[in-house]
Image (tube, rainbow, N blue to C red; front, side, top):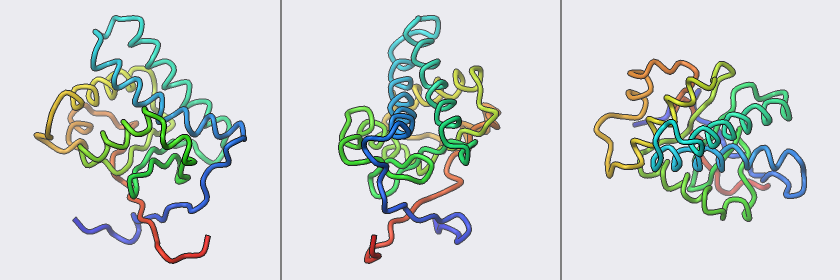
Length: 173
């Protein structure tokens, strides 16, 4: 499927600096996302671990929004097997973390290029969204595209694959 020019983005060749406070917020979103998906996969919805993982995921999104005033929509994307958060690639150490690698594999397996959490994304939406992704985790292949699942669940606070990133080789960094 060709990528239209207006939806194609380039990867920020600069990674997030390792020592800044903002780094923790950028790393926390994909880390908490994957942890919440896995927790939802293995425990019933009423389990305190499920509720805690969902709350920590929402907190990570909200903290990132506060820390970076330009990002009311929080995006987690995959390009060239690298997780990006709001267009910035994680540093090598953070990219090597088990949860980040797991999320990268999950995105690859289900052909997810990007997920955008709009500013209306709330606790109820997160419960539905995480349940959908946890259900996917138990499957070997998709029966319908993830975008269709999101539409069927009427989740308007989440967008799937509205952006795709491509790495441009040969550019000076």
